Length: 347
Image 1 (spheres, rainbow, N blue to C red):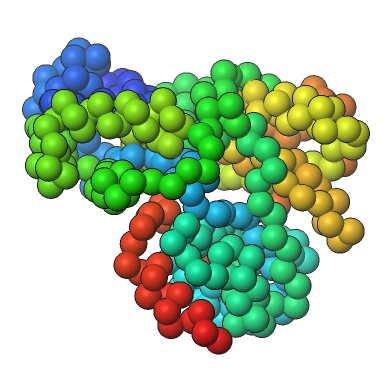
Image 2: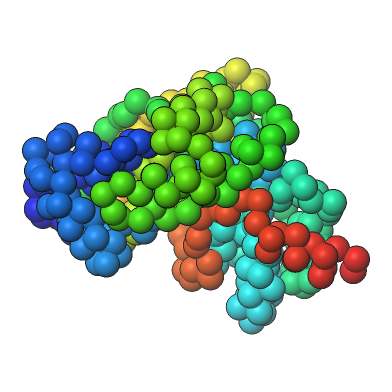
């Protein structure tokens, strides 16, 4: 059963995960779509945020298209030192997720490094490897994006083999181009958590020195260019009824086009929120990564079995997080990034 039972709440959460309209009275527009009053929707959203069902309402940017370098990183750390190592790694402001997982490579984190960085991604990760005392560190950048977009079906029961259209993949991404100063300011403002007020974007537009129509047009341009995936709500998945997730990793043989074909098939499963091709290593043979979400661990296992049966892939593993050290949204072009590099870059 879903943790959310009110039908209007369910419909509202489904809509807000897909998009929150950038413009005048966004919650009024959502109210129109769910057949409720604006004041009622504002109160519902406030309540869902207070209950920690909605984590944040903000722009969801494509990291690479903003010029950032990013990667998933796997580190093998002496288990008795995992907490200490994780604390050191989590201090980097570009580390958004950091978990202990059930594998010899036990510390997993994601990191994004600004185009303004003097160190760059590889030197930053090498420095974190040194500072954390990791025995081994594997850089696992995205080689191909098949799917990204967490959208939980909070109101319905889903089957392990349910398929769904992929909303955002490699073809939506823009090239790595430098942003104009005005665009960087747009990113800094739009990544904030949206106030739950009748006309929240008016203050954003005023701060940026533009009209509300110009703000909406800039958002459309960023979307067309692949820099902005969507402006939407992100949920606390456990409080929305999805208490389990697994990183399903697959060893897919063959030529590039054959690997891509399998990656696209895996991305088509509704239970999959993220699907990437990443490098493999002699001690890490898996090259396709899928994040699978379910209302229980058994849901995740069933989804992975269905994916295995549909693709004929038998060489896969499920990695579950056993401890969460850090989970935040990436914040772009911040002073904290520059401060960390100034304090650590000369080591």
